[in-house]
Amino acid sequence: MRTRYFLLAFVVAVLVSSLAQGQTTSKIDNDFVQRTFGKDFTIVQEVGGTVADMDGDGVEDVVIAARCKNPLLDQAEHDYAVIDPYYTFFGYGDPKVTMTFVEDSPAKRGLVVLIIHGDGPEAWRSATPKAKYVVINLPYRTLTVRKMRRKKLTVQAVYAEEGNEFSETSALFFDGKNYKYVPMGSSME
Image 1 (cartoon, rainbow, N blue to C red):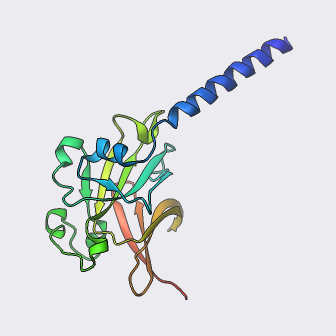
Image 2: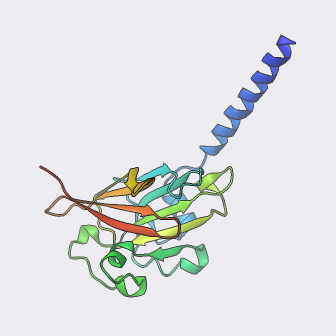
């Protein structure tokens, strides 16, 4: 009887190990970004990508720092939503209009944040994820994903170090329907 349990435990361990190895075959690189969002997108290697559960459904999602001149071009073909939570916070967030706002720093031009809400056992690697977003006009030098207290809830948020002269930090979080931008202030240094 004991040998059956050991045999069953061994088979389960092998299956779990092989499934875990199968999920790591998709990596976050330029090929993945261009296949998922379009050929005009390139990953920002210095910042890269992070895996986290952004929408709170228990399935892995991914947040990727990228560049793109005009994300509206491939929107219909690759089935993603272009959103602008930064200018929505300041009163006007229509991406068709806010994309025309010119960034004064050439290093910040074309910066976008790509977010994929995963679905099923393949999570963000799925051929048909739950949702894909391209966040425009979010100023950042670095991105990190951490938990954030929002009223009585704790949610995952993307913290952006904005990289301006004030060393400001901001957060981007999913409220269940939309992504929201929240300024967090400057550093204490």
